[in-house]
Amino acid sequence: MPTIEIDGRTYELVERHRPRDENDSRIYKGFNTFVRIGPAPVVEANLTAHKRLANAGFPVAHILRDGTVGDERFFIEESLGERILRLEFADEVKAHGEITADSFDSFVGIIRQYLEAQAKLPAPNGSHDFFERMHVARLCDELPELSSAIEEKAEQHFKAISAFPFVVSHGDLSPNNMLSKGVIDLEDSLSAPFGYDAVSALTTCEWFPEDVEFEFPITPYHFTQSQRAQYLSMCDEVATGNNLPSVSANLDHLDFFRAVWLTEGMAEWPKTKRYRHERFIREYLRP
Image (tube, one colour):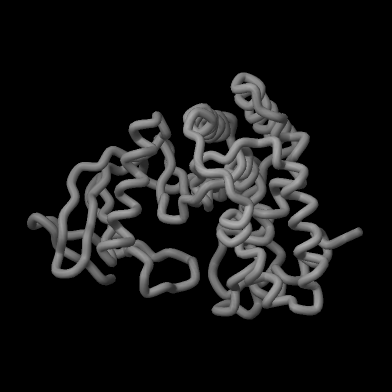
């Protein structure tokens, strides 16, 4: 496995299942620490965003050190846990049929802290940038015969959630980017309506069903109906406490944009692309 050495310590590369981009940073794991390293502008932007979130009270890792290696920038952050929650959840579902109460409560607690901080950190309001970062136009390019329908649905859903303020958003929040003590992987941060991250953390698992053949191994898990209800109740409690609209009442509108983000850009994995396209058309473009 590829490694790097910083300050006399060796770190092992963390494999990530996402489309490759030469401008992406890379993540390496050490003893109770992680290193994020890559192109200087990219890592510097990640570091700035990370510090801002930490100062605002988001459940993110403490930065231990940052510096340069050749032409690349890096920063070292503390570990927030040994395993991502996706793997913990998958093991528990396999062993017990559902996510345990302790693990679910920990997940809800992290999201609550995240949403409370997020509600108090406004961001620039701009539908154009949000649509671009959600890859609406890219999905239209992939499905040109349905581009008008996608654009129309996107406008309808965005209008429905326009009462939410724009806030600093993770952009890819799910148990895949969470550990027992907080949230990781902030490089996709963007400005988005409040509630988008909350819904992403709930619905992402639905795009990795156990009975579908993917090009990569998956670790499927699911939330029970009771857990979904408890989770959405918590989201609504935070929203109401900050004078914001109900998240649960806007679940379908917010989830549309998560579905677009998860559907587009699967060209590297043809089976996954076909499944995602077919599912999106079937479930999100209905009249």
